[in-house]
Image 1 (spheres, rainbow, N blue to C red):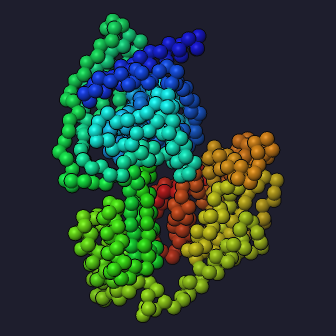
Image 2 (image 1 turned 90 degrees about the vertical axis):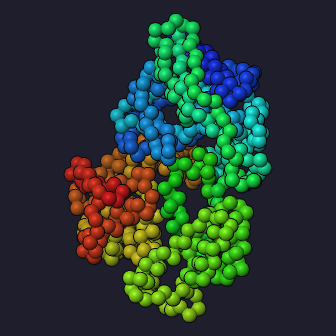
Image 3 (image 1 turned 30 degrees about the vertical axis):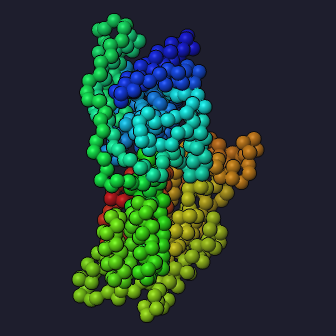
Length: 560
């Protein structure tokens, strides 16, 4: 019964995909037989997806953000929902409707249409209580089919579907993410042209599914089939895609990877960390939406000749320039050169230096850190940081429990909750940190319960995520699936987390911090905020939320 239903569904959506592809091509002025000849039933495929419930649904995703590597995807999801897509840089939830089909335009259609139709980034968010099901039909050609743009001049090189899939797999293996179409962009576009796809409304009616259709991108569609005979009703409303005015420049380089140049007359630490912090705001679109970023750091640039050489190269590559130049004359030169060459630029150090100078009523030295003539004596803070690092290294993974009383911060939790990297990060900030693992069957050091409880911070994590981390760890150590221990088995993971929870509940003054999906810096910020509040060293805003579970305080690693 299920098999025949799936076959009927596959046949029906296959016909639908062919019709939609022909319609989209026709609206571009191309009556093409390409899809009928290359996207055959044996090259397309149907997939059923099951997403189990997740206890922390807003933090764990069933499917990472991605675009589809096909021409079209026809999706039917149940009433649970969870599908989200990117619109105007924000994630928008697709309202669940079991009587609706969702049409996603894929990477191949974007390449074939030369960017007229865009492949939309999407993801799936798991539900906290119930499982979710969906059925997806992927409309794609055989691996040897060549994908060529139907519009000239093309911004994409010709490639076979097999080459595209192979490149995606290599990118995921190398970078951990799919890059996709930017790998196949031409470097030079000699006769630039911008093509805009207007908004269309497609009214569709099909005997098999009285449904509302939603196309990703600038397309919307609504059903007119509820009271119609089985013959389909197809009507396109709207303007055809049109050519817009050419770009201002006669020629312009188009790069698959955008670049940011960071220039400093010192170490470049400030520029690099500022850029990385800003890039963190664009994780949702940097890869799959066609704009991966490379950063290049140029430190110790203290003469105008080298500075101008870097700026000329940035102009040639179409890069952005970010600089921290303490020398005001160099900063002025960089600003003027970027203006002349039309390079987007940002001076990170200049504005804040001027503001502080105005506030203090003192002129800045204009010398980068470490430059001749600038005092660089080793401070007490420096030696305190070295001492903290030495202590933290010795106290790693529960070593020397008799020295716990010397620690300023003590981290405790089950294995693979990030205790060691978090300890190292805090040590580099000058804090003496010890970490104590909680392992079933291994006695917890008595000194952990004898020290000042205000020093102790518990770490916990979602069991599904913890199992994934532990399996990866076991694999990196060379343990095969057959011989691995219960270390990464879900039952054991849950038992160990419960073991830790009982210890935390018996020590209610220990804050327990949820670290699932959080960067080390985020968790460290929460710990330091609590630490300083307790030490009364500074007055800081309160944490946005404090969640009580089973008598314990949980602090999410998000600052208010």
